[in-house]
Amino acid sequence: MKKILGFTIVLLLVIAIALAVAIWNLPNTNTSSVRVMIEPGSTLGRNAANWEKDGWLPSALLLRIQARLLDKQNVLKAGEYNVPTGLTGPQLLQWFITAKPVTYRVSLIEGTRLTDALAVLKATTRLTQDIDPLTPEAVAALLDIKGNPEGWLYPDTYVYQSGDKVSALIQQAHDRMTRQLAKAWAERDEELPYKVPYEALVMASIVEKETAVPAERPEIAGVFVRRLQKGMRLETDPTVIYGMGDKYKGNIRKRDLLNRKNPYNTYRIKGLPPTPIALAGRAALDAALNPEEGKTLFFVAKGDGTHYFSATLAEHNKAVYQYQIKARKKNYRSTPTSK
Image (cartoon, rainbow, N blue to C red; front, side):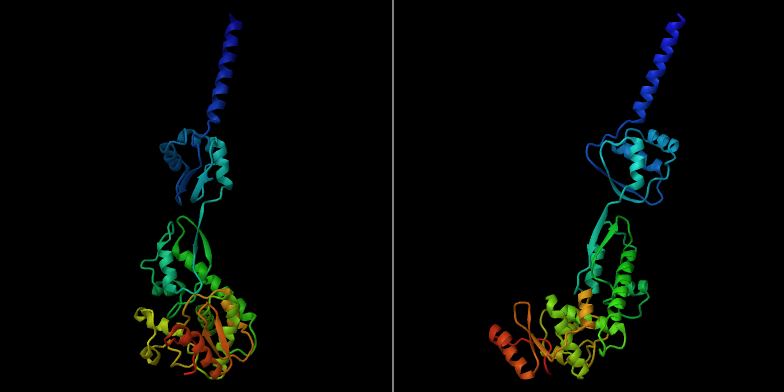
């Protein structure tokens, strides 16, 4: 009798251990990866309860017990994660220790204005909009910039996590522009007509707007630098357009070029406009600070995305006739001209 009782106890003990092991290693029921969002400051218990309600975690209580026994109660980090299939509770807790949160990307495009960049950021999903309204004035206040903050964000693709603040991304873009401008300034050619790095940033934005052909940037920068050195006006349409703002409807008229009230009208003002006119990339910064040497003072769009460069007004006028007047059968003001 005692032997039977002992055998029964042992059997029950074995069954209990096997059951405990089976429960301990109970796998999650998700048959594909499941996206979870862990809010800042949320607890394992709260998240586990939500996961159990969602139907893929067998037991929130079991996971809390496992976390306590394994001393892994604080393994969750804020972010969005794709939980793989078939993990047991202990495996899930261990997975969270090294798991990488889901990331997203947003691109600020070279040559676009700050208002365009802010519109992109405003429409970006899963980015916390902690600046409302998101305006250039608000950006200036955030970055402690007096006046127009145009040009002070570096155009690039930025990686962020769900819940990151738009203010943090703007600060990151500004810090990158500050570093890139400082680096380009330190590597600049000598005898350039810039007193401070900001003037080079202004020039880089004009170069960025004038051409989408990378090989042309140094030559276009060279034209503008030589015009500044000779006391010539830059006479570049993109600055006029920027100064016109919402009044620009796709065409520049003669009265727009004669408007002296537009501070960006480089057909009337001498020197650089007061601020950048777009986001300038590193290639444009390098071109502005390392312009191509030569004698060219004019260029005209050829109609295929490239430009024809001239050293004299006579040559430039011929190019204007060939590529603009003759080709399009109408007057077209290329930039820059001589008047």
